[in-house]
Amino acid sequence: MEPPSGPASRRHVPWNRLLLAVSLLTFGTLPTTAQLTIEVVPPLAAEGTDILLLAHNVTKNSLGCTWYSGERVENSQLIASYRADTNVTTKGPAHSGRETLYPNGTLLIQHVTQKDTGSYTLLILKNDLRTERQTGHLHVHPVLPTPVITSNNSSPWEHKDTVVLTCGPETQDTSYMWWINDQSLPSSTRLELSEDKRTLTVFSVTRKDTGPYVCEARNPVSVRRSDPFTLQVLYPVARPSLQASNTTVAEHEGPVVLTCLTDETGVSIRWFFKGQSLLLTRGMTLSLDNSTLTIDPVSRKDAGDYECEVSNRANSSKSDPHRLSVTWQENTQALNVETIVGIVIGLLLVLTLAAALGCFLFLHRGNWPPASTAVHQKVDIQPLLGEWAKLPHTPGAKSYFFSQDVVPLVALSPRPPYLMPDHQLPSTRNYYAPTQMFTVKSTTKQMWVISSSRQVSLWTVGKSLSETQDRRPS
Image 1 (spheres, helix red, strand yellow):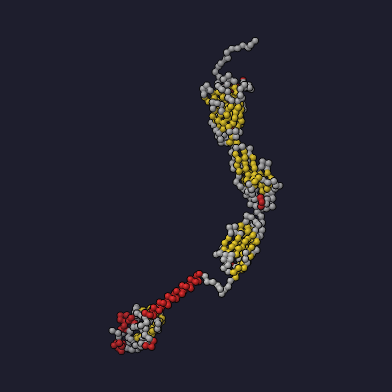
Image 2 (cartoon, helix red, strand yellow):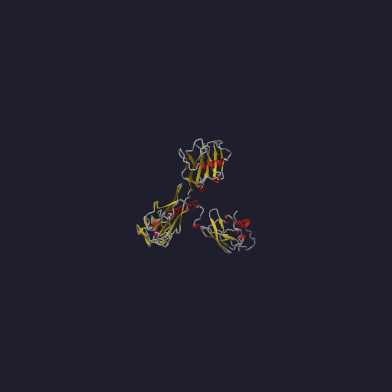
């Protein structure tokens, strides 16, 4: 006997409740067609990107679909629902504003964060009021920042200190790798990695452990490498040695090459001369790394003791002094360019003065009385001076005369100011005559001593003016 059949009872029920009730009644019913699946696109979700929860094998002509946050079908977890008959999408309590539900059942989540990691459940309502249910899982991975290597001691002493290098920052679901000198870590008892490989310990460092070191952080969506990190391993510097191509060299010859020899690497080199820091002079050059000093040509000033010094951040060391000897001959000393130029200029000046003197003597050869015909004529001076010297015309007055082959004072320019007996003229005043110049060298009450080509004397003769009136020049 078949069970009774009749029309189903129908009454108005909210869409969400109806869908939830049908899902509970049909939970666990195996589909007769291809199974509903959910695919996360892209499969590795990076923080900040957009992802799709893509629904596959959705039943055709379904009445609608609903997405829930989590694995449980609860109204409080409802993200959004879609009704095919009205083409309306309704947002639920779990909607964040970044979700979009498409009619084919696919859910878009924009700008995902790590908080979006979890399960998502899709419920499909078929036209026969049966439901299909499937859950997908989303894992949002962070985009890793560039890691940075830190050290507990960036300048350790060789064979003494232990260094701990850390790759940070620490992030979840991240693996770490290390490189040294662009190669993977060698097998060594002095190298030790932590369990998560984020920390590298170097025991009893040596100068070969300077690096550079690089660490790599990796997760499913990103790979980042740190900048290179170099250890400054400190160690005592060995004494260098100084080598010279010549120890004794003649002046103006060369070259002499001094080389600072050292097995140290990563050191700086300085030079010293006579115990002081070397100042490069003419003819001295240094190589790019300062290890070689070249002197060419050699000067006698270059003779002395030379030293080189190597240093690192910890200490320094000097070589033993190396003496350079320079020989020369005094009697064969060569004249430099400046000396030759000075000699030539001096010769030209002497020749010029000699020529000028010759021309002067030639032009005035007729104006000089011969020494044997010296004029001893006495000339009254007062009438010749005019307004410049007015002496009283009284008997017994003294007049000034001159002789000794001279030109009358009336021809002097400028004229002497006053020829009073007690007056002394300045000893540096010059007086010019048409043919020669007279310089007053010294004076007394009775005499001028005047320098020229001849000495000229002017003195008093004790004659009255009346005795010489007829001898005044017209």
